[in-house]
Figure 1 (cartoon, helix red, strand yellow):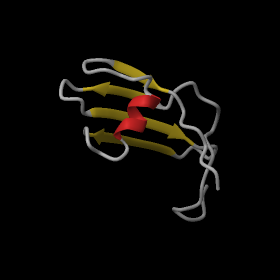
Figure 2 (tube, one colour):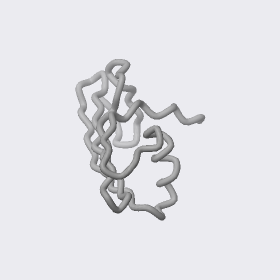
Figure 3 (tube, one colour):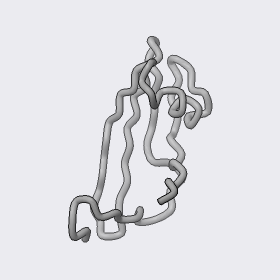
Length: 82
């Protein structure tokens, strides 16, 4: 178990997807994310990202250019450089 809330715990196993995404008719992204660490900690999040958000373009690209009305599995995000 993590000794502090900010201590990084790696995922319990390699996964093909980390959740699901849907694009609303107005272009808003709804992303449901889930992961589990080696110690059994489960993390879940709902992200709602409207057009105009600074993260929007990169999320659409990560979701293989998702279009309004479409849903997609979310592939794991690349690890950030430390």
